[in-house]
Image (cartoon, rainbow, N blue to C red; front, side, top):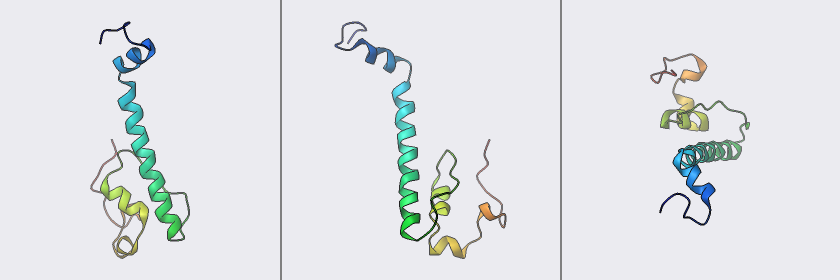
Length: 87
């Protein structure tokens, strides 16, 4: 469909600049963060936890703090070297 011939021209402009993919990826990040908060609440842990983007499987698992992550040293407590570098 050509620009200007749609029912809502504002949608054509938004899709042309890449806004929908950026907002969609933000939605996924915050959904993951909400799921981690729910898992932590089930375990009786606090709501505050660090989670930086990209939310890798390692960061998600460490933020959930289950019985397996308690047995291993965590990069967040300084006991181990982090294999994922923030640039």
